[in-house]
Image (cartoon, rainbow, N blue to C red):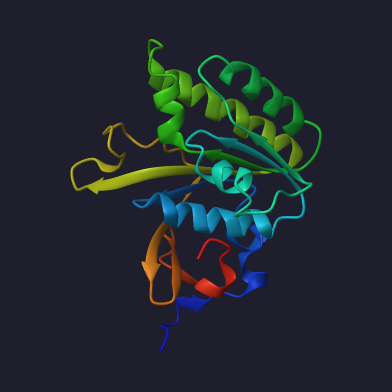
Length: 205
């Protein structure tokens, strides 16, 4: 039996407006990349507005290019390299300024890795996130940032395996993904509510 704050998800409960917030960055925290891929694939599948997907670990785009996941007409998939990251970020910002979008940064770890040759990489990454979220507020868009993390009692959530601190602001909404019996458990760390997405609703399971 589920507790009062633990609900079985249905297809309608996994719509972006039900699980994300326009006024906050939604930080998707995970320890297993396949958990993240399963959750985001379902979120993308249920999204009708424009999707701007910056794929920095190439896991999601690998599923799309291999045909395991279908491509969607509303999906713009960016697969940057160290040479094209600046150009693709500019294109993403331009497209996000035109209309409401779901903006996915997958993952924060990958963004740090791609920019690790730059001085003050932490400030650079924070500035990029700030630009994206500022643009999102103008168009009432949703921003999702995926991060592979582990928890340290002394420091809180840190990126794994680099140990860099998770970028947090007052407008962060943190969701932790875990395996549950029969699906993915979506833990809202802000209010302790939980949602179980059954495996039969997840494209990659």
